[in-house]
Length: 596
Image 1 (cartoon, rainbow, N blue to C red):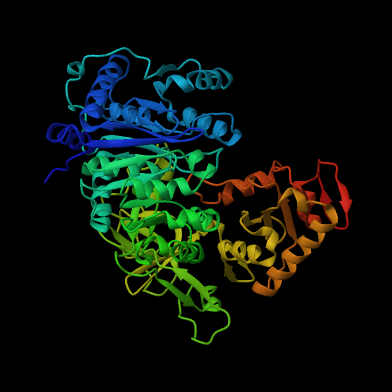
Image 2: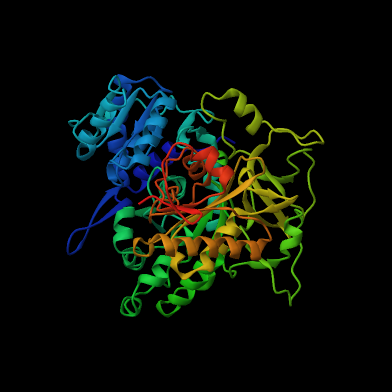
């Protein structure tokens, strides 16, 4: 039985119910909320018009770089590319943020697009970026400035095949080395089906997202999946969320939203910033799926805090859903079952260091709490020893390997890496597996994800998890509350642990920071029994995160080693300083350094 792709689905929805809202865009002015909508008939007509224009300039299979703010024009653009058989490449708008500029340039150079699409409001910004980065040879078009076109000029989806590329989406690892994941039409359709099996999404449902549209969850889960189902997506910008987190919850209430996804920090932010008066004015009873997905371990505390805070508004604790996402498998891999409480289990930390999952004793003072990422349906999953490729039994930690129709075709123009990552075979000869690079374990059919293998800290034969150490740092001093930090290791005669954490400017005097650095070192030594000799403090907002809120440890490690972080204060081991800080003059304050 052949698949029914996204384009065919949208055409079908437009034919059967053209007046149904496909997307609603919310914006906030100084005083009030404004909205505009795009109906399925309008979306189909706009996509046909753009597809006709694109086919005059591009060949099927060419790439189109999409540089848009959150808005309806992006939705029209990505569907127009798909209608034409052009491969859309969503990227962050190069809007002045240095990280966005670097990432957009890296994606543009790697994907080799035929055309750049944006909107009229962003055209000058995009054109300036292209000229500065040597990309002005590319054709750049503001899709909302083009005059009316004949939708009949589009000659149908004849260039769209199940194996054809639907999307080229870039991973959010190192900015200097972007990897484009080739997602086919079949990959998308299959991933939509396993998402539907977990969330029972119907055309009558509304989803809501403020995540950027170049982010996997914001794009695939909260926009393309609802369009595939004929449902309605309500969009708002991340800026509007951060300006007032309550806007997200008010929109969930006002628009009868059933599914909305966000990173864990967003739930904590709402729990702490929304006032009692605002809570009393809300009704969140219709919000059935408050989803948190990703490849990092999920912290239970923000989700529990959110459920307790908004219980008086009708929010049901069982609405909290957790899942495992990975770009190389299109996006969705697993999710917790509906109607069950958040599954938080306590495990023996000493056995976890030995890669064994064993429940902690009921009276154990020290235990590692893990949140289940749910069960896997529609995909073949194995936990594998990364060295021997032996399949491990339940309860043993190893690399997560995945096989199935959601697994992408590989990395764009990286044949060697594609063969290594997407063509893995187990020790007993089973082939065709995706090596995720993530550490996980299965217990009682539940998948627990413990983080990226390359980010693990192996000290004295013990496996330590950076996520655990980051959480411990936050608890070491109240000055770290609601700020972000990260932990990683750098090459040295012995592996050296580095702690980076944001601090507020008002606490940034050298004497205070010297004491704070010693507190961090002593606390981690007591908690984990390891030597931590390197601590650096940064201004708020300087720890890089993905659009989905995941700390980018690999990028932060790169920036630290390149001496590109401009820290407020550093207290480094002599050997670490010699290797990575040989050039910069410093002002000594005890063993630390103040760079203000």
